[in-house]
Image (cartoon, rainbow, N blue to C red):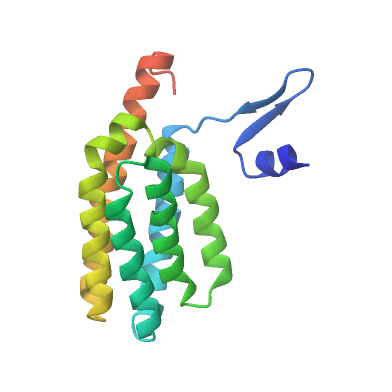
Length: 175
């Protein structure tokens, strides 16, 4: 049953007489997932900033502070990153949007967690998350959108480039 759930989320392919095989994404699919994430998060930000409360802001600050502590542990850091964005998005009350973003992030996590990519970028990614939280704390929608835009314009292409290079080296660039 667990494998069927993973297959429904495109994380594995079930093959007769072979079992489950971890599914790779194409560059197009990676681009699609990131487009969905950013579209949802920008829409959510417009709803959240006018209503975000002090308790949520304190939680966001706590998460980003924890990221500094675990920045040498890719899995722990990524879980906090997901929690940061999920906590922010949950304020909207849009449970479908949160679920969609969660599924997209599950599908891309293995690419963001590549050891060399992660170690080269974790400090920059943490700084971008800190900028995002600071903009939230000011309740400044333009600054929040700019912080999200910075993530979209820089973090996503870094992961995409790393993934494209990996595809080219392992598959001869066939995808």
